[in-house]
Image (cartoon, rainbow, N blue to C red; front, side):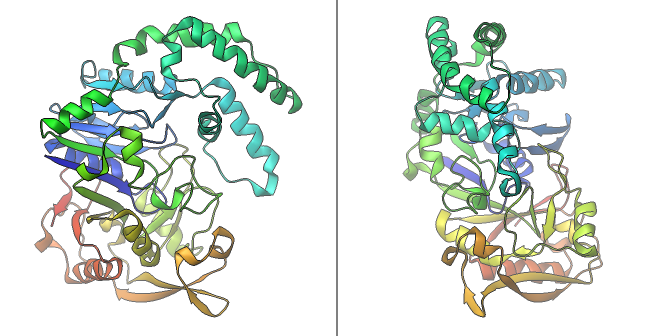
Length: 423
């Protein structure tokens, strides 16, 4: 038995989708355990190119079953659109996708509240995706959530929705928004129920049975370590816990069963939205990384901010999460650079600091210290053997291992499934 956890080691958008799609070939189950459709995993395989937001990326492997576990929040329309997209592409979804009824549902008012709260913050806005993720999590911990369980019980759903609209409509009116109509919401969401119901099932016994039978399970993380609600760059963070520990309550699996924690990181760094980014480049090099890497958000389409690899942050993330190996993606994007830098330290007010010493406001002010490495002119795109890499690329990767303190297990050299090196 192996329970592998794949998580993002930076600010999301690290290329987790490709790594999960690749590893799913040897997985019996792939489990999404947190976040919502604010995640975007881009996958390129024989079926085409896909941007997945809710359904686990392992769904493309015929031998793999996909689970959306209790820790995930769901936009029913997005889920149904993904099911339709996959079926149209020839991917079997029925009897292979299981959705926990414990999942909280993103309601129409969550998206409106997300938008008006963000606008009300003015210069203090945090750059949310506008998908209603923060408000649905706020309702979840504030005992105001509506779950798929509730939607499956029409009377219970109506009762809970009445209470929530009694709370939400006065807020909407205060911000100049039109109050929402209960009958219209009920009609719309209940009309989606027949399409969702075949996939709704308690996922806990499925996962527990898989553990007992020593099946191979992959836990699919969304976002990245530095978007965590506690340990990320709060308030420029996401609403859910993105660390390795989130898998235990978000999927219903005990921590001792997790055998591998594979951290995915780009060979450089990117970030979408507001918040501190110590190694961000504002020059032509940053623009070149964006254009070569196609750095535009899979969920929002927003241009990503680009910078050099941050070993200080990765080292902290490795200690906090217990990374057992690294998967480095987009190595090929660095092809042709004369020099490549790695951040090895932070300086604040003339003193050396670590990531955990400071908050987001101070992280915005740090000056990174860099090591400069010689680039390589030999193309790495499509390489699937370590021996094919130029010596400069090998030296760069070896230094990342040394600075982070974790060995590299996988190196992605392109978008396609077979453009990967297993070290």
